[in-house]
Amino acid sequence: MTTPADPFAVLRTKKYVALLVLAAVLGVVISFLIYWYLKLITETQAWVYTDLPKGLGFHGEPPWWPLLPLAVAGAVVGATIRYLPGRGGHSPS
Image (cartoon, rainbow, N blue to C red; front, side, top):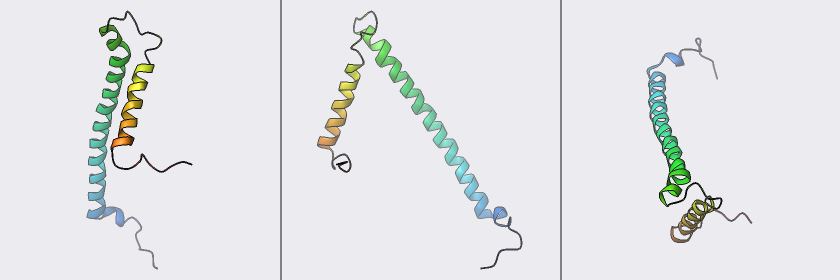
């Protein structure tokens, strides 16, 4: 195997530049989507833990309130494992 005379010749090819442009476009799109996903998570947490209890008539968040979203999430995960194809991954045992 011989090495090329100019090791940076690969960096100047059109394919390499196209690959860099593709990576930049993907990076911008994925960053945009992740930003809005994190913003949605933040707004959802604020709604579940502050606005929802007040909307239901509580004057603040009751001490037992975090159990309610955990129970809902557990029910969703349980239904997903039970009713969707597969068994939720391999058995750890």
